[in-house]
Length: 138
Image 1 (cartoon, rainbow, N blue to C red):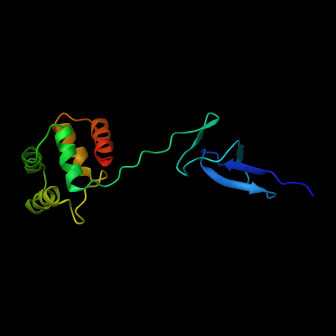
Image 2 (cartoon, rainbow, N blue to C red; image 1 turned 45 degrees about the horizontal axis):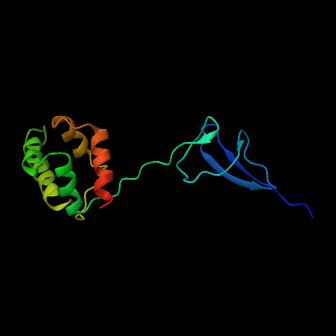
Image 3 (cartoon, helix red, strand yellow; image 1 turned 90 degrees about the vertical axis):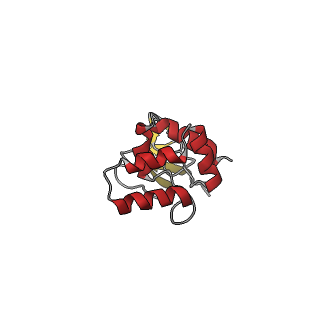
């Protein structure tokens, strides 16, 4: 009895297709040495890319820590919201979300408010990301 070898394949964009044992992979698939650690990784130049960074939602405590790490306070955030070209209703909702953590009491990194407010406070996206990761580890 012959032992069948497991082979791993990616598509032309480097996305993992899967492993094949004794079956033909899809046309155009490229064999690679091993499977990725994370399904979001890409095969680039003979190796898997780094796994993507995951930003977990922050609790109220973590949110307050990130504001302090970034050197800003809630009144600064409110002043910036007031300066946005939004309706009064949109501004009220944004402020309530800052106060309460949105609909579920948690803050999401994907909320565009972070990227709108950061540059106004002289804070880059990379700085926000770095401090977010620090705060979510608490």
